[in-house]
Length: 155
Image 1: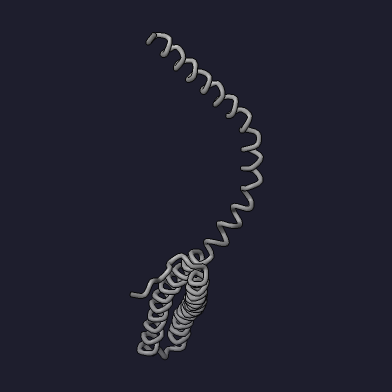
Image 2: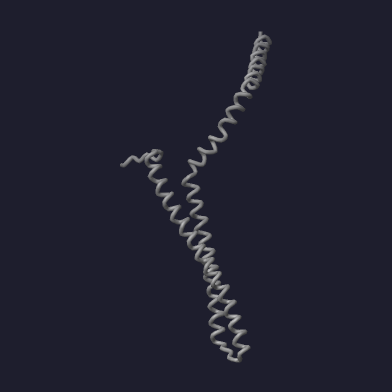
């Protein structure tokens, strides 16, 4: 039976590198899909406007081409739908990639916050120690007095 040590630093570093690489890939893919979806949404919006202006121009000249207007309108709606779907998918991938990166860098984030808090906590402990030791001394005296009084009552 192979004995695997789960808390080895080498194993942690190796696995953490894999998680960081996966997180970066998912994050970059999500951002790329988001950018492409915004471009498609803009193309769908401008295409719909172009279809409307083309329809007005053709109505003014008397050469109305309904099939061309329908193709343009439905093509624009299709671009809207595709852009919206890709937007949701890209946002989801970006969020997942961000969460993976946060998990992978949690150790560094915790070390950073500890470095920020440690001097304040140390100063607080130094100022509180005399008060706590006085209180502990008073409690110890009261307990020992109670024990002595109890021993006197038994005699």
